[in-house]
Amino acid sequence: MRIKLAEIIGPSGPLEPTVEAFDALSALEQRCLDANENPNFRTFGEINIGLHKQYQNVIRNRPLREYSDKLFYQTSRMWFQLLPQTDWKEEIGDLLQEIRAVKRYFELGDIESAGFVHRNHLSMVVRRLNSLL
Image 1: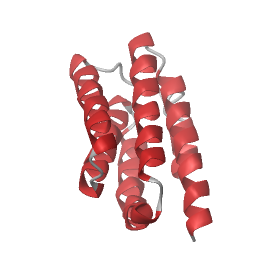
Image 2: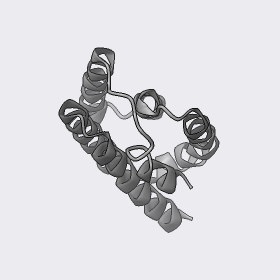
Image 3: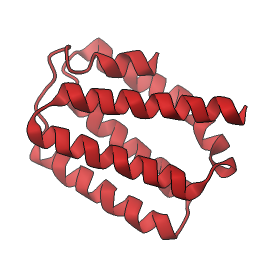
């Protein structure tokens, strides 16, 4: 369901990202770079929550935003429980790629493409989860 919701962020009439959003994405990018050499699952979770908040901040449609938020917190717990079984460099690298792509699409004002970046990242995560289960 989260994958489908990410697809409709753009068509739902999103808000423009704020200057604070760009600052937050830059800070998340730096945290990923720092975490690459110092694996820390809590940091990984905090970065994911920070990225989730940036997506939430551009969703104008309140029911979509609320449902997306609820599903994020319900499903992310399972992912974080499986995180120790994954390849740290791959996970943090993929997260860094997502942050950089979203930042670029936000800069271009292309929220729909940012939503598809998120959709594709979620799809990849689901495939990895399924392989671990």
